[in-house]
Image (cartoon, rainbow, N blue to C red; front, top):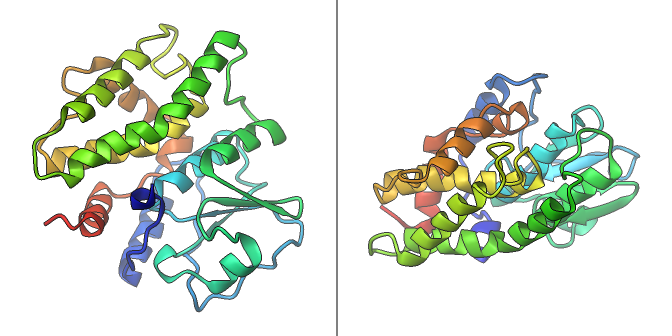
Length: 262
């Protein structure tokens, strides 16, 4: 979706500093110092020198997916984070790194790959670390169904935010579908029971929708949805995810500006 895959708002330098400082200060294990975003005035890193680089924007939910996967696999020392300022994008990023000019992208083995869900799967197939998929064939099949639903879920949730009306039936149905889905397996609080790439696919957006609906629509997405409430509680115990989170107020302000909401 154009609405949520591109972030053309110019963040003030003070806001960028706040993002980096706050993200660095979160209780993570191991603690990671995050680089400042690169702008149109920034020189490129030494491209294709053998370093594996994950290009992200700290406030982008799509990039957050790949960032979480990298962290969960324990690849902080093997995959370097390079932050891009999407509002003041360096020209070399499109010209020399990723012609699609989006984040996330991964520079690895003299190639650059993109698309967040593809990168999550790529990390799991090409790097060591905890598996992001269970062995159970039924769970693997269900995982593919859930990954295929992510765009429809996001569209349904963003539609009500853009509307002047109350929360739509479509939005309620999408949230109820997530609630039911989270109850399918009883061996854990996550989509496939145990933490997996499906949780990584959804959590950046669920995180944002909880903030946005509470503040913009006065609507609690977890009310009457105990599985969703438990999911949010449990995923916030996972360092790989929490170290990628930003200040909720910052995310809210950015989104209100982007959506033109007072």
